[in-house]
Amino acid sequence: MRVLVVEDERRLALALQRGLQSEGFSVDVAHDGLQGLWMASEHEYDLIVLDIMLPGLNGYRVCARLRAAGHEAGILMLTAKDGEYDEAEALDTGADDFLSKPFSYLVLVARLRALGRRTGRRGPRTMTFGDLTLDPARHLCSRGGTEIRLTAREFAVLEYLARRPGEVVPKREILEQVWDSAFDGDPNVVEVHVSAVRRKIDAPFGRTALETVRGAGYRLAADGG
Image (cartoon, rainbow, N blue to C red):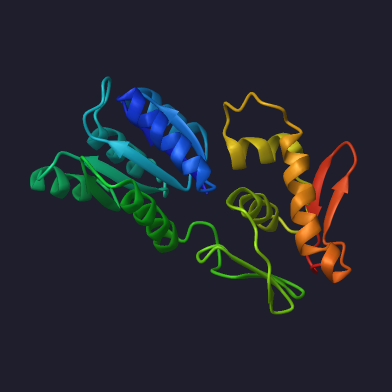
């Protein structure tokens, strides 16, 4: 899933970005309300972690404007400790959930995963391609009933391709969606992860579901290969 973190405390924002990326999320960061509103309007996010006290435009106004414009991303708002009025206003302006500072990182991740399941923006609970099955909500993958263990990033790559079965998806797009829009490392990291996924979902079963289209990108067969 793609997440936008809007938080002006830079150390906290960086810690959240690194932590969520290690969980398999693709994460972008904004440090003020105006930047956050622009990014959320220009890019498609599944989830938004939104602080209330932001320079430029506070979290309430960012949330209200996004909802008024029809954006459906799940919004988790960070509120002040014991701030029941903050929590009430967060929900009234369109937030789906809230978490009081200081918070447990484990609880934050659990809340985001639960929010992602509730909003359901990414389609059906289980995706099936022949005998290949993905369950994003439970982070499970199997082939013919045999469970396949994927790392968080491998699962994210496969899930993104599975959202567009039969289509050729460019490497750059996978990089932006599964890693983040500001990634400046070696783009061949996509090829490395695709190869790892192929070794797990295809090779042991004599299948060819995950195809490399030279010079264009990658494609997951709609029939599971």
